[in-house]
Image (cartoon, rainbow, N blue to C red; front, side, top):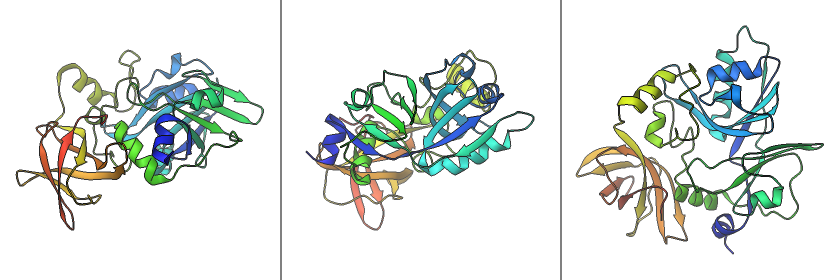
Amino acid sequence: MSDQERLRRGLGLVRPYRVVSVVGPDARRFLHGVLSADVAALPVGASTRTLLLEPRGKLVAHGWLLAIADDRFALVVDEPVGVSTLEHLGRFCFRVDVELELGERPGVLWGPRARERAGVEPGAVVSRADGLVADLAPPRSGGPPRVLVLGPLPDEVPAVDEEAFAAVRIEAGEPVAGVDVDTTTIPQEAELVAGAVSFTKGCYLGQELVARIDSRGHVNRLLRGIVVEADGVPAVGAEVRRAGRRVGTLTSAARSDRLGAWIGLAVLRRECEPGAEVELAGEEQVLGRVAALPLS
């Protein structure tokens, strides 16, 4: 079984995330004010998807919040934005009794067998004498199951190479913060709002833009998949052009053994609908087509 198939059908070990611990008597109140999820209502022993935004509503990080105890939480974010997440939280950490710390890259069990192997229920955070395990709900409904492990890993779970993981992640339509999405991205452009934002909790950092778009607006760009079915290897960073006009930039690329093609992610102008033909203008010009996410 290939590494890609292991992630799709079985179980593999990956390390795509960093963990920021938030500890102290004011931890829950502090996080409720800066994150998009309803932290006040999050039970101890549960996890939820959430967003960390700039004051103007653009994306800093997307990930999961783990409620380990009433005064102890862990924010799980993409590895490229681990440091910037810590720094961003620190800017708003005044007149509150909390301590922030950035941990190393934890092991993540990825695949349909992850929960069974870790012994954890959907959405649960389980503390153990030697660490904890936490189920992380996929950003897209029906996405790949995954369980974060802090502490000893289960025996005989094979590590998967980064290229295979990239292919499965792109197929699933999951953008990496700091790579595919960044502080120029509105959360709705990457379909990151569902399951990560409470529209009833009241104010939080960056709320105004997200709420305004949800209630009466739309975005002009959308995260799309790109499939290269002709010859050629797409280059990350290549301009995506439609009828000679630049409509975005290719931010991730990998070869999918399931689709038998190179695939990628790009935030494109809204008019680039699935099925549209595009040119990827890197060192060589490669032809591709826009595809809806997840890729099938």
